[in-house]
Length: 488
Image (cartoon, rainbow, N blue to C red; front, side):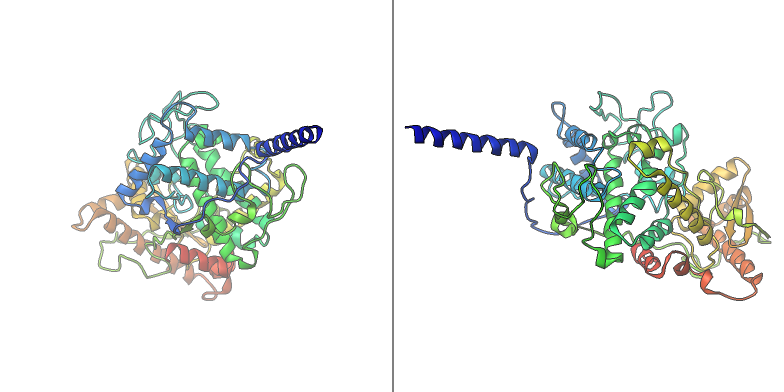
C-alpha cells in the first residue's frame, strides 16, 4: 500500500513538473511540414483579386470577440519587445512571427501568401507609394487625432494598449514621408556585413527603424503591429535577410551573439512562443515560402538605353548644366525637386533607439557610412537608381505637376554637374503631344539626363574609371544582386 502510494505521488509530481515545463516552453514542438513551397511577392505585383483576398484575410482574423487573433499577435510582439529588438533574435524571431501570422491568414483563405512591400523602391518619395492608395492600406492620419479615414482598414480598431482608431502621423504631422533607404544603400550594407551580428544590427537600425519612425503613431510604438503595414514591412525586412544569406552563402546558417538574458546566442535557441528553434528558420523553404524578386526594370540605366528611344518633343535649347560641389551630392530627405539623385534618410531619433535597445554609437557610424554611399552613388554616371523619379514615370509626373503648380523648378544632379528644369515649361511642352503624357514627359527628361551625363563626361580628364561604377561603390556582388532583384 505504501509502495503504491509512493508511486502515485511520484506520478503526480512528474506530471506537475511536465505541466510547469509546458508553461515555460508552451510550444516547443516542430511546425507542420510543408505541402508546397510558394512565393511571397511584392504587393504591387499581385492582381486586384489576390490583393483583396489578402486584405480580407487580415480583416477576418481581426473579427470576433476581443482580443481577436490579430490582437494576440500585436500583444505577442509587445511582450517580446525586450528580447526581439536590439539582440540576435531580431531577424529570426520576426521571421517566425510573420510566418505564424501568414499561417493564420491561410486558415481563413488557403490561397493567401503574405506579400512584401519593397519600400526601398519607393524610398525617394515614400508617400507616393501605391500602398497608401484609398483602395489599399489608406494614407496618412487626419489632422488632430491622426486617425486613418480611407483605405480598406479605415474602420480598423486596434485593441492594445487600449481600443483606439488606427493612427498614422507621417514625419510628425507632414504629408510627406522622409526618404527611406534605397536599394543601393541596402545592398551596400549587405555587402559590408560579413557576419550575422553585423547584418542583424545594421538591418534593424537604421533601415528597418526608419520606416517605423517615418510612418509614426501606431507604427512608432512597440504596439506597431496594430498597423497592417507592419506585416508587409517586416516581410521585406525578412527578404533582406534572405538576400544577404544568398549574397554570403557561407553565412547562410550563421547565428551568434549574446541574448538579452546574457546567454550565448545559439542556433538551438527556441523562438518563444513559436514552434521554431533559430535553426528551423534559416531556410525559408523549411517554412513553406520563397521570395520572388521585384523585377521592375527601369526607365533607363546608363547613358542611352531606355524605353523612350523614339522621337519626342524636346525643349530647345536643353537646359544648361552648372558645376556643383560635393555637398550637393547628399540631398535632403524631404527634398521633392531632385529627379535623378538619391536623398539621404534622416537620423533615427535617440528615443526610438533606446526603446529598441540599439547601440547608438554604432547606429551613428552606420548612418555616416550611408552618407558616403549616397554621395558616391550620386557621382556614378553609369547607374540610375530604380528608386528615383526618372525611373518611375508616375512619380516623375506627380513631381512635375506639383512643381509646375507652384511655378517651381526641378533639378537633376549627377557627378559634378546639375541641370535646373522649369517644371511649368516641361509640363506645357508635353501637353501638346499626341502620345501619352507619362511617356512624353519621361522621354523628354531622358534626353535631358543624357545631355547632363554627356556634359559631366566632357569635363572629365579621362573616360570611365573604376571609381565611376556602381560595383566599386557598393561592391561587385552587391551590385549584381541589385540588378538581378530589379531586372536592370
